[in-house]
Image (cartoon, rainbow, N blue to C red):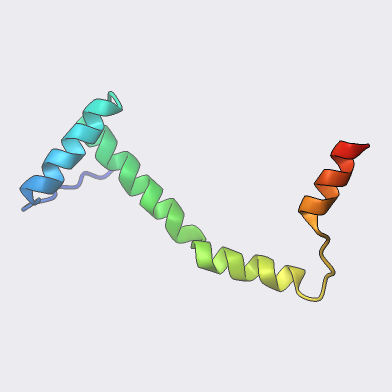
Length: 76
């Protein structure tokens, strides 16, 4: 496993990361690693790209009125 050293972290950023680590009962290293991993997973499929993909798959389909259908279900 690789090691990473980050220099010149702004004081405010360091304090925020430390506070977050304490709230989550993690070490500073664990919290930083978690945030890096989450950032990496966001890169896999960005939200806008995913929305475009869903819209493309649904293009041309007739979609129902979900709220109306739920109301009808409840009234049965």
